[in-house]
Amino acid sequence: MEEEKLLVRKIESGTVIDHIPAGKGLEVINILNVDLKHNETAVVLVNVQSRKMGRKDVIKVENKQLSDWEVNKIALIAPTASLNIIKNWKVIEKQNVKLPEILVGVTNCPNISCITNTDEYLKKKFIVEKERPLKLRCFYCERIFEREEIA
Ligand SMILES: [Zn+2]
Image (cartoon, rainbow, N blue to C red; front, top):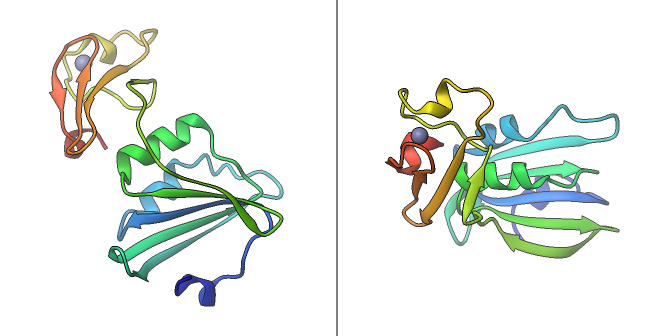
């Protein structure tokens, strides 16, 4: 595989978030509820060489599986990211992050006059109209937002 192997040891179980756009790794680690529990450890590799992307960031999280909320959030910030689920030192599952058709409770509506920004009981809800380039339509105010406005 690649360079990062030389920098950080393999993990026995957990999740490797690969192919994060270079420079986005710290944003991703911020949204992972790291609130890491007793045995959960994370490392962020910044600006790693990548054949596919030139440069990329990589995050290894030991002993942690990501929640759906975390995966959705990663898909917003780092749409190129892929997740490798590790068990017994081996990758048992590989998947690219993907947004669901409807995104609930993951991100706020940038429209300040949107009702979701004043009614705290309303769940923020977006229809994913298009993934690349990203177009999200707020379920309530119906405005359409691009990645730069949302993530
Ligand atoms: Zn809205």
